Amino acid sequence: LPNMKEFVTEAIVMNCTHVGEWDITATLFTKEIGRVEARAVGGKKPCSKFAPHLDQLNLVTARLVEKNAITLTDVLTENRFNKTRKNGGALQKALKSLAIMNAVIPAMNQDQRFWLFLTQSLEQGKLNPNETMKILGYDAANSKCGSCKKQDVSFFVPDRQIFLCAVCKAKISNCDTLLIQ
Image (cartoon, rainbow, N blue to C red; front, side, top):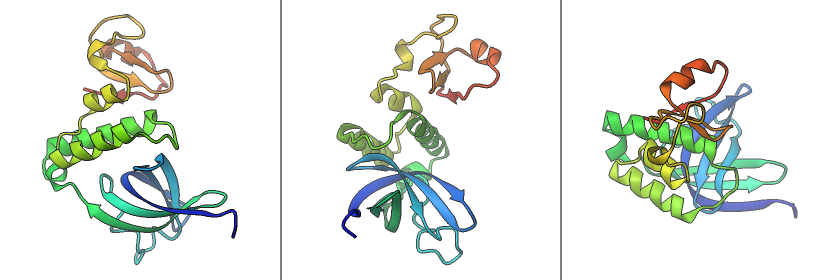
C-alpha cells in the first residue's frame, strides 16, 4: 500500500462521537500534527480495545493510519491526569477548555508551545478556559463585547471570532457560543 502513511504520536483525547452502529470518531490533539479526527472502527463494541482508552482528557499513545481518511488503529493510555479528574472544579474547567480547543484550533496545525501548555496544565490540575483562550490568541481579559463594546465579556462566538457580554448573547438566538467564565 504505497499511498498509506502510518505514524505513532502522543495525543490528548478531546472528544469522541458515535458514527454508525459500531464506530467512533475520536478528536485528538496530537503532539506531532495538532488537532485531528480519526475513526476508530468498531470502537463502540462492548469488547473494543479502544473503549478504556478514549476517555476525554486521557493522554494516549495513538497509532494512526492515513489513506483516504485517518484511522485510529491502536491506542494506549499513558496518563489520566488524576489531579484534574479528582477535583470537580478543575475537571469542569478542563472540559470547557477542550470545547474551546475543538471550536478554535484548526485541524492539522502543529503547535509545540500549546502542547506543552496543555499537558503541563492537565498534570497540575490547572487547565482553565481563560488561559486556554489567551494562549490561543483570544484574551478575554483585554477584550470588549463585539456588539455593544462593553468590557465585561462572558461568551465567545467561534465562527465570528468575537466575544459577547451576557446581555448581547441573550439577544442572539441561533449562534453557537462558548461560556468562558
